[in-house]
Every structure is written in C-alpha cells, then in structure tokens.
Image (cartoon, rainbow, N blue to C red):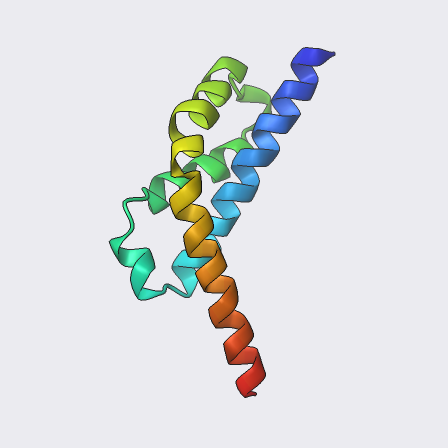
Length: 94
C-alpha cells in the first residue's frame, strides 16, 4: 500500500508542476524566458505521467522529484508568485 501512495504522490506532484509550467508558458512573463527551467521537458513529463499512468516507474518518479524538481522549487516559486501578482493586477484593471 505504501508503494501505491508514493506512486500517487509523486505522480500528482509531477502533474501539478507540469500544469503550472504549461500555464506559465501560455502567458509568459519576461522572467519566464530567462529562467533556467526546462519548461518543455517538464510539460512533456507531466503529459507522460498523466496519460501513461500504468507505465510509471516509481523509482524514476522519485528521482525526478528529488533531483530535478526540488532544486527548481525556489526559482519556480518566485516565477509563480510573480505570475499570480501580474494576474491580480490585470484583473484589477478590468
């Protein structure tokens, strides 16, 4: 059962992060383009984990989260907060 919970947790984290990346690239801020984040790779990985669920390798998912996603967290968090702030400003202007 723990194995299933880990699989679900890693998959959900990858799905959420990939979707945020997709949203950020749909309405890019100048900072998004200069960020050292592999946007397309993260979006493609999200799509794979979402649509090929039964073929997910749990150790590979764990490695992805630990080695790639966690180090990107500070930069991606900063970009997400800026994106959110810009969205609120645009909404207030309407």
